[in-house]
Every structure is written in structure tokens, then in C-alpha cells.
Length: 194
View 1 (cartoon, rainbow, N blue to C red):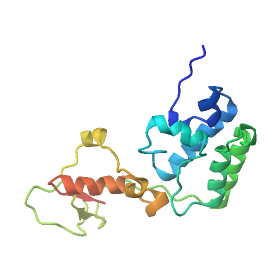
View 2: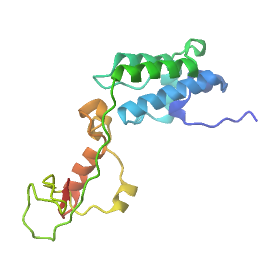
View 3: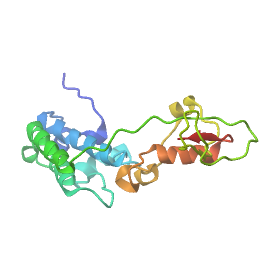
């Protein structure tokens, strides 16, 4: 079949121009995924689909980077986005470069420990440094107001990666930091976080 499908934001210039898919066009798409993983963002947010192909093919537009990006990572992703498919790295080269970048980081961060959630009754005073049932004094009150797991199914994330509390922008807390703040502004019940 001559019909191809895919996500417009992840299509390589040659796919948009000629409809030809190859390993090199997969590398381009993988570069977009690497950008998404780093920024916790959506590429080309707000750009109309009718304009996007022109921007990618004719104006060589690529997703914008946050202010601080490890140069090796940025170089790899931008190599994946090269306009010339023959200049893009192979997946074997990508794996080698990602492995080298990981090795530069040294010892991995220790895993996070589970937390305890306690729901106080409405009207109870705000408590700080409360002792948990296990005797640990690690609980502090955070006003998030009535979190229900169903809330997460319908959340639409912040409109920009910088608002998402993403590691690329604001330390290492991840997008849930901003989600928590949004819930704090929207609901009316307190919970304890450990």
C-alpha cells in the first residue's frame, strides 16, 4: 500500500516530502522521543498541522530545548534530527552514545522509598512532623485537597514543560510536582505526605 501512517510531529522531513520510510526516518522519530523524555513536553505544541510540515521541511524547525541540557545528550538528539537521512546515526551508534552518557553519570540515584498517606478528618488542625505508626517522624502536612485516583485519568498536564516541574527545568521532582500544586488549588481536603 502507498498509504503510510504516523504521528506528524515525529515524521522525518523525507517522510513528509516523499512518503519514504526507512531506518533513518525511524532514527529521526526516536530523536523526537528522546527530546520528549528529557523535557516532558510535546513537540511543536500549538503549531497547526497544516503549517508543521512546512516548518520541518523548509524552515528546518525542530523542537526547542530548555535552557540547560547536557551537551552530549543534545548533540545526540540533534544528530538524530539531521535534515540529511544519511547523516543520522544508526541505532547501534545511538546505543553506544547513550551508554557512554550513562557511564559518565556514575553511580545511579538510590531508589525512592515508599511513602505513607494519611487522610485527616475535615476540620482537624494542620500537623507538622507527626510520628507515623512505625515511629518515623517523616510525615508533614501538604494541602492537596481530596485526591482521587480517577483525577489522574482526566488530568491535562501543564501547557509547557517549564510548568510541569520537569527535571530539565526545575530540579528532579518530575511532572507530578506541578500536578500536586494544581490539585492543591482545586480541591478542599488535607492529606499527609511522607
